[in-house]
Image 1: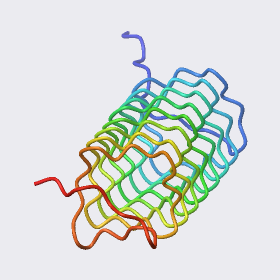
Image 2: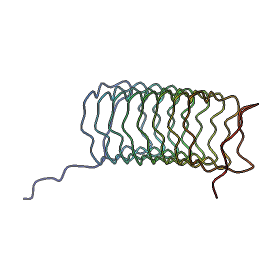
Image 3: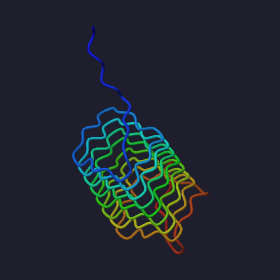
Image 4: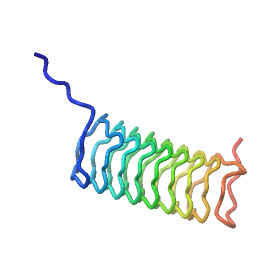
Length: 185
């Protein structure tokens, strides 16, 4: 008799404490993870497509290549998360805390980041096309070479934001009175 192979699928109760958990390449699709504590958890390449992570704590979590497509992360705490190449396509990150997160080359295409706090985050080469960044705090954010095509930055705070090499077009909405950087061709 062969030993049972470990399952890629995981069941988690809302509000569970998974501090430091190793969920490497696990599947948590469409899972209710409201209020779950994933502080310093290893979510490398975890599939969280369509999951609900409202008020989840992902402080200092490793979300490298994690898939949050169409996930609900309202009020989630991703402070200091490391998530290069993470996927947030059509994710709802409204009012999420992403302070000092390293999300270079992450995909936020069509994501909702309304009123999100990204103070001091690294979004170098991130795809923010068609993203809603209305009233987001982008103070001291590194957006070098990011894609802002058709992004909505109305009323966003861009104090000290690095915008060198950003890609934007006529449908990109900037804060009133803000002079955008030269367009990249």
